[in-house]
Image 1 (spheres, one colour):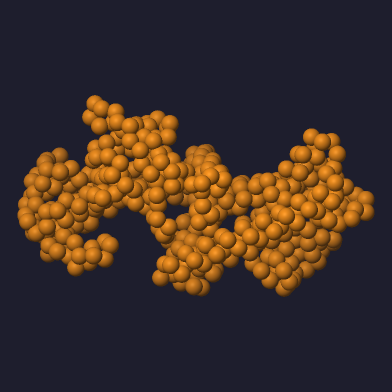
Image 2: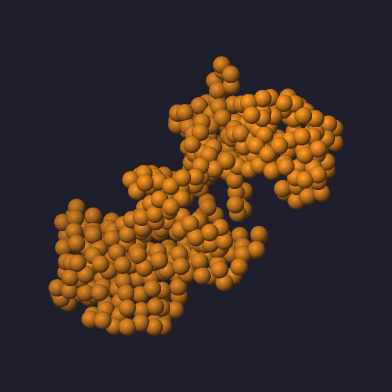
Length: 446
């Protein structure tokens, strides 16, 4: 269960930094071009506290769901005075840089944060950068229905040749509710298979496991429970389990082992292990455990098979490169998900709002400060991309208008801008309402 004080503190930390960095980008570039900044606010609505320095009122406002920088003459519905300090008095190229400065700062923040994290600790499941070979296919899963079998190697997925498991996850996330086309190597055969990526709407989804795809990996015993069937049969820590009753179970976790034991039930099972270069067959009689990993009774032998992780500290250059690659992949994935909104297979339920951010901030904080920083970097990318959507009121809408005016070589009429901004405001309010409604609905269904 999440701690409410920790969740609120994590939410304020994440959102506070992201909003400050975003608005500071606009503020700094506006100041650089001598645009008069009237308000720098963290939050919306009523002013709570703050101070004034020069032309600018620096404040914290009532609603902590964003922030804004108000520049003189910025609002297209305001009449111009011709003051050289007004936003509209500056050339388009300067207004363009003011507009993109906020999203650019969020992207820079994501890269900087991830670079720092990776220099301290670069950790990820070891299977992610390995070839996509199946160690197990879960019974009754979409993968089994599609025709996958243990030992299959995904050779091509959606045109990506020789994918790693990280590539497979990326393609699945980018094609939610769609059918993925794959070429699978099975022995000397190449088989075309199709898998539909229907993912349940719940927290902490292991997307590969939900589809029944279990990566190949070493099943190394991390712990043998005292008094367990495994201890009685002579299993040791660091033994590598390679088969049960002749069926390979090299999955890097307990999935394959548990599945075979469930079929075997209380009958003695032949566990084949390698120990210091030797292959041994041990007879183990499973016992019915009242509570397995999913809370249901299951047959167990009393061993833990921890997942293997790749952990190291990267140099600055390597950390910067890894951070840049991760940001590119995540940005591309976000664009693909946004693109799905314009297809029949897209859904607003894929997106979260402030409630989701608060909940996930709390979970990340419970997992540790490093995880919270990684989460903040991901949300920073989301904020940058969302703000660059070509919707008036957002930074991307202003950029679009400036580009249109540059092509036309004249300003868009004031009346047209007013109507466009009014329509955009209504659209954003409705969009925000739907996203927040989805957030709250998901919270009640947990």
